[in-house]
Length: 373
Ligand code: SAH
Image 1: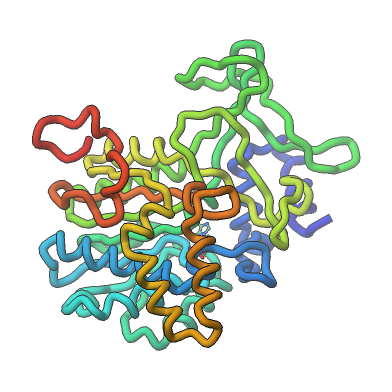
Image 2: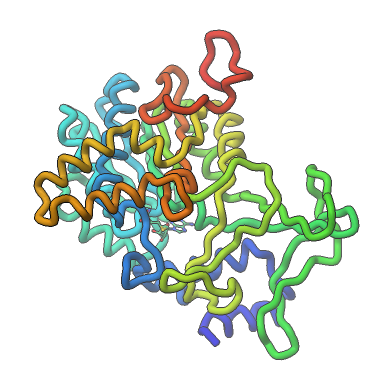
């Protein structure tokens, strides 16, 4: 039994079964035993590998995307470069290095990292020590100072808690985590019906409610609409609404039971990009995509970058070719179409770099002369 399992058993014994969202939030963010609060989970020796950890090309291209957005914004003299859930700080370090080639951009930047994990904050501090820019840390987006924003979020929204509701007898019931007679964690359903606008279909259908993710997207989009800027959200996800239980646990690069090792396995859900887009549009910003990560990176020139790095590589470019394939391949082994990219911008920035290849979200309903709506 993990230490967090013991905590959860005590909590449930006192308060009764908890929501899936609370379970997820405690597993990832409990101050003492939460998964991210106690470890650096990335890389071959860890539990999973993210795009910036696969290759420097990923962060570099994201950095150039930000520099391009800054130019479209009219090169404001001060802009907040914000990363949500920066992990080891690798993406930001690569982005800042690449962005040097755009004159004036780095001088305008203030880097703000939104990170709850003390372990990862230390790691980010070390990674960015030589970056030559001022960096501040925040526990949440509410603490970000005023000013135009460039926001980057890679595999951040998938770590935010969702509620799950399950269809039974023509109604929705919230899925809860409770205890069995032996003190083990089990899923169950709340007896009372859950009020949801979507009709409950056949028994067993699961709908995930991304309440925190959509709130964060709406808040940032509202700021972007009011004071300018752009946001890039990259994640494993789909365009909902769709039914399905996507909650999964990962340990040492393999799937494990979601309830088996609370606090010691990574928990994620697939991101509903439609829900994020609706939230951002509702807050007054323009929304672009989602497009596949492969199409996005290709349009930003990843093939040329891989070729340039290969020419200098001792292995003849084999590692670069593998990284390129992993980041962009559209088959089940690659991230090219499983991972998607959504951009949120202030009005008037046009179609952001990387979003030309695919029809824009809302293209069919676009009002004459307006931004995609
Ligand atoms: N972007 C990084 C790390 C992704 S893992 C990469 O691509 O490698 C998720 C990151 O989000 C971790 O840094 C984790 O500590 C952070 N995180 C998770 N939940 C968070 C929350 N509610 N608020 C802020 N950061 C959070």
